Image 1 (spheres, one colour):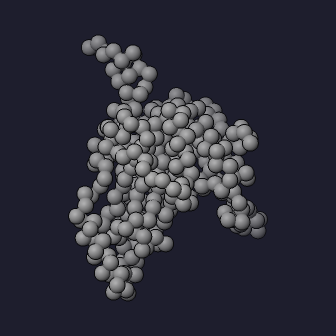
Image 2: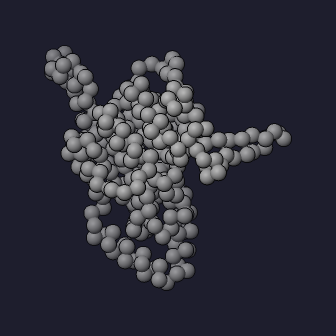
Image 3: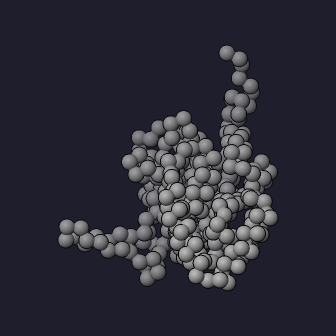
Length: 299
């Protein structure tokens, strides 16, 4: 199966993009409590975002696992299939962001990944950031840390990130990052933790942490205020814990351990964003100081 058979993609009348970066958030194994995909949604405005591409779902899913949805509107039945859309969001005075929102495929992963890489190259994306959320031994009473890794040695050094060290079964994000490395496209994987004892609940605090981190890293604004949802779900979480004395003791142990550790395993979001932009600037053909890397003359 060829990418051209499954990828519908067109830039249409789009002007030259401003330092574009792609962020990828997919429902599935690496999206516990949907925290990651909801964070990516914060960078797409329904009224302003432009759909520039879409991956045909038909070859990629076992529809007995990822079932389509049926709805009725004015007595007419509609079937909604899993969607994988590339959305372009332009930010005046900032970089442009291309977001892929979709569902981790069941089949033909190589072709699916090739479709993503094809769009990233066609749009001139300077880097790809994959985001995820995973169950971890952290307390729900603390703001969850955002951790990251990259296989790019220079990027890892600048951002203080670790090289990927996980070995074992992986999701589509792991396959994508490996493919991007082969194609020499810088990529970063960011992950936010979800309390494993409440992983079936919603965690807007995790979504907020990941969103704000992405804002700083990408140097783009995101109009998001989840304070009401955070407060509401904190009450729900507390009620669950209050009904189980053993779980209360476990949470207190997690709190003590969390407070002993460094609050994050990567630099502050502001520092990370500055270093990320410096790295991308150095990768551009004209360099950070004008054509051929030569310093521009004073005006």
